[in-house]
Image 1 (cartoon, rainbow, N blue to C red):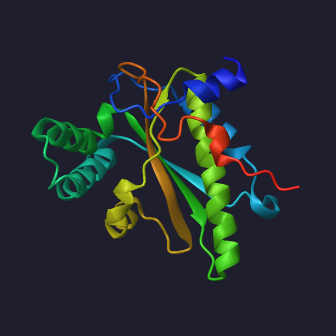
Image 2: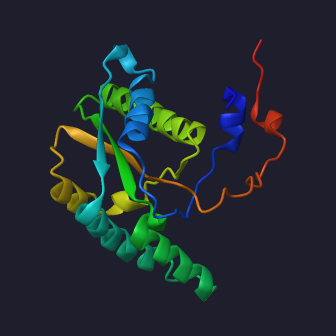
Amino acid sequence: MEFFEVIKKRRAVRMYKPDPVSREDILTILEAAHAAPSGRNLQSWSFLVISGEKKQVMGESYGKIAEGYTRDWEDPQARESFINYSRTYGGAPVIIMVLADADPVPGVNRMHLESGCAAMENILLAATALGLGTCWMTGPLQDEANLRKLLDIPDDKQIVAVTPLGHPVAWPDPPVFPVPDFEQKIRWII
């Protein structure tokens, strides 16, 4: 797939087939993540590939968060759909979590976090290029203490984000942008 086509095709996928994702594809995706730019070229990221029982426990945790988050939703069908998605991460067979070094110096910590975000974006684009779906998620981090304990994440690491990874049931339609003319977001300074 051509580069700009990959960027435009990438979507937040919320329903996945149960088909497994090959170890080779996961390694290809994480190699792309590792090629992301990083502050001072420290490559201060690491990755957790989660499946099986730990993924199920993560879903239980996120399901509880979703129940609270959607408590005031007026559409019961939309609420139940979102809660079910949260409990199963859309049925994806794998979750990838991006970690970055944590640092007590705010500027350095921000550098590590931004490097982790660059790696996360590469994960999403590489997966799309391979025909796999993802969804950048930070909602599950509302139960960070439990995730840290469950996945044995040390204090010197910060969680950047998580994404389900799998074969999409279908590719979502392009989003409707609140500001469709992206040039309104540009300010030229001369």
